[in-house]
Image (tube, rainbow, N blue to C red; front, side, top):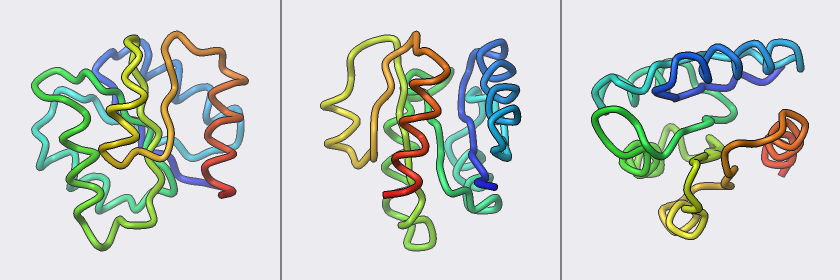
Length: 121
């Protein structure tokens, strides 16, 4: 069972994603994205997930900042990061170090397939 940290500032989306991942056999760790960057990074360090599903637009800062912090931490270098947004920010996310990008709204099957591909890479 893969542990997946979900960072999302929309509480409804966070709940739906958690339910979907549980149903698919993952261990979701939902985190509301309106926390401070240091707090979010601390949770990722503590949980040591196989994958982080990270929204680009968070409450108080940009998810790309958290992505860069994850990439600069030697203890998290093997953590896969899948960014998501309602705007096409694929290029920016991949340049910043994301392993993949999912455009919202996404179909559940497509999201799970993309996550599985990243985890098996």
